[in-house]
Length: 395
Image (cartoon, rainbow, N blue to C red; front, top):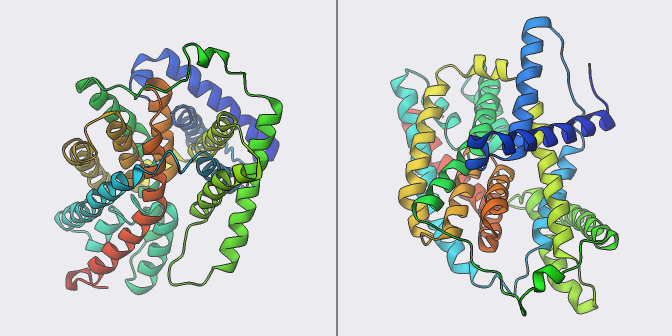
């Protein structure tokens, strides 16, 4: 049975509501900031996978809207970036990138070392490393096709997609608990929001229909602008991801529109982009065949388990410390786990869950998507090119 677009959207919205309800009533989930889309989506996937394995009944969803939802989310992130308030983020971004590069090396070293101990081809160690965990499904698919043709590795595509999927799940599950641990251990608090007068927050009007309409129009305009830019600057030496184009278009609009007297409601933009991200994530989780994922993982579960241990240690001992040991550093640490184990969308969901509970972290919301979208892809490609050139890789 396949749900059409309307049915798929309804199912996704229902699972979002169920996920939120479960998170609010299961103390351990709320305590550790597990995102609502992860909870609801995994519940649906578990039920659907069980039905498929036991009765043969298969329920699939229409997924064609997912790319647009993701692009609208990143457009919304850009539309919320006021460069006048974010000039101080330059130094933090530089520090973040400095600590990111060695972690990619660590991740691949762990993967290759365990693969050799398990008597697997060392390339499978990279599959259990940054190819899938940092790179995600898209990068994983590109490399898997090459490994199947050049290295004649069997079932590498299926294994690659499996590892990327497990990483996506784990990235959403462990980022919140680690950040919560750091926040509680160091008694961190979000920076106070400046207001002109006492009680100003109470006097702010609710989000209007006009404000939400303008925010949605701006997000869609940023998506269209990004597509136009991508078409005209395609074929270059460096391929810029579509969602980064959307974010840059949103940033440009956010900072140029005021000169034309147009001011968007940042609250409406944040709300609209948050809904888009939640729908994207819950639909991604709902599409998983958990039984098949567990069956295909095999020895890769050992590699992934060690990757979880190493990223938690690296975040606590390196990332959090070098990012300043403050509340923003804790939120950024959750993002670091999100996109180094899953995807940039997972990183943003981790930060969203934490800031919804503890307060805003504007610097983190600029640093993480920029690093996760563009710089990390360049670093990952550089590291993988160097490692694949090593003699024992057989490439």
